[in-house]
Length: 132
Image 1 (spheres, rainbow, N blue to C red):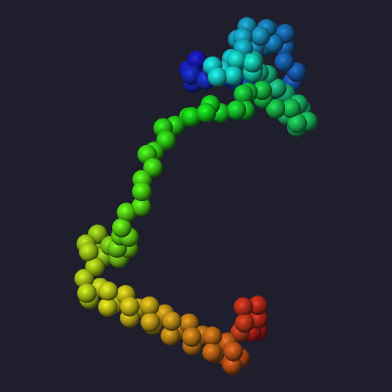
Image 2: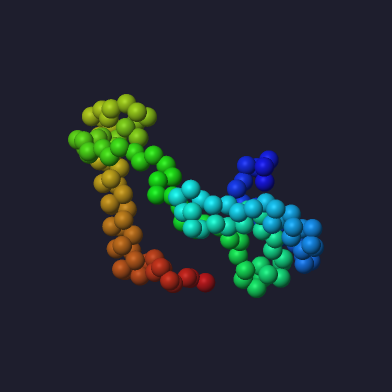
């Protein structure tokens, strides 16, 4: 536990723990969280596989401290930014880029409309139909 800088450790064994094992675990003492001094737990716990399969769990404080990280400053939304920069590699979109994006959107709509009309006419299988 010292090497890993852990405050609580668990040892899982197939056999019942021996007396020296229990003494060693008892000698490790208890972990008492700073913020919750009433929730002390054994620092070293020995559990058998049988106990784990029966539902026994490791004892540890299951309540996190109120703030475990720094809270980021809240920012106000600014003016709407141009999402096109993702497409153009970071540079502002030119008039040609905008024209291309509009043409692409129209083509997608046209293809979507063709698929729907073909589906309605029975020329395409529906979402659950599979042709043999």
